[in-house]
Image 1 (cartoon, rainbow, N blue to C red):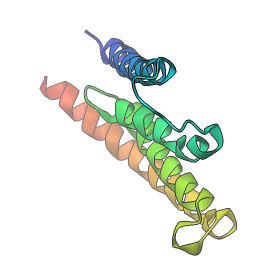
Image 2: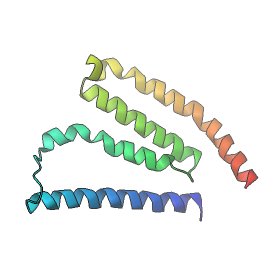
Image 3: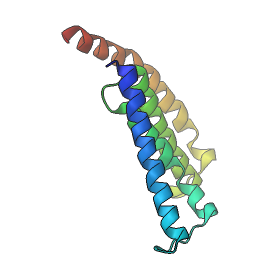
Image 4: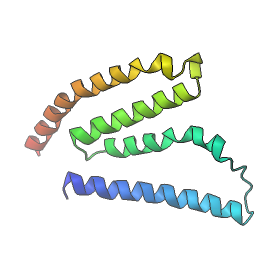
Length: 125
């Protein structure tokens, strides 16, 4: 099985589980077996967790250097968005945007290192 195939299967499985869980919870709410206070405006603040899930999926081996660095970027971006949107530590988008430049630079620096690590692992296999 290639890395690309393993990644595609893993991605579909995890997103399938997320969709089944969300659908089951909403169905149980609709048939009144559980009571949710479903407020889309309040729920909106938690959307970055979808990016965290996506990032983690990309980082779970077997993976490539590109998938790993993209996953790392998605997790950082989700954290940055959550902190800025909710003004955690009293800071918002205007104060925290330079952190995106730092994270971008870190990902650019990590990519060649990860490429070398993955190449050496392939040679050993």
